[in-house]
Length: 72
Image 1 (tube, one colour):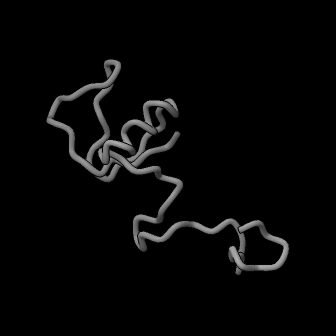
Image 2: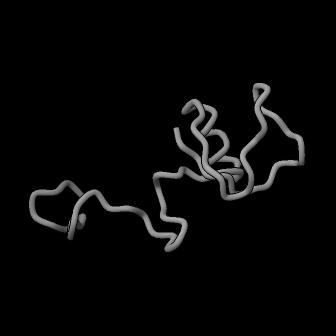
């Protein structure tokens, strides 16, 4: 799972012997660990939102939940 840190960890903090990424930096970690960090508000899923707009990425141009042929 790719995450983006939303909280700065204390200087020198490590996870499995590696330094934590800085505030706003991204890293890949196991899905269970990433889900826990996202739920705790320490990180966000990097693939989910754009850091510039804060909007969710869509799966296709013009796709909406109300479009014919989609499950809502």
